[in-house]
Image (cartoon, rainbow, N blue to C red; front, side, top):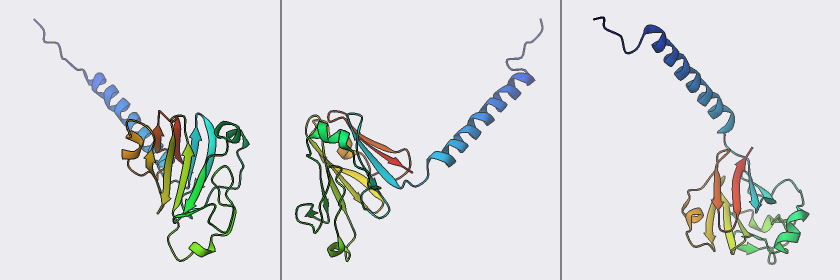
Length: 170
């Protein structure tokens, strides 16, 4: 009776080639998608709420998001270093973007506190030191609050009951 080999030479070569291709694909994906993020995109129920800069801790590129106005009814607010938009020298639009002067805060690290209205209640997002973190949320399980701060491209924090998604983008 002849012994049959469990693996033949060609089988081993095929497995090694497939593993090499998978490792190369993961390496390329990591290089192209996992850099330090520059902005945080906030969406509520699939509608863009705002984009906020992680580097300078100032709100995004000046875009207005009127589609969200109809859904949220103008309930989003922004605070920087504990100074709310109504107390600051400037105004804040619906996206939470501080459109005024924040020179009175220049001596401190700028911290953005963004109130995001969701389906169940509100979520509070903190942007500080190049990272975004969910400070609090009016949801029963608090998974989004216990999630670690995000700063790399592609990382997300999701509050399912409020339908809020925070995603780091380039």
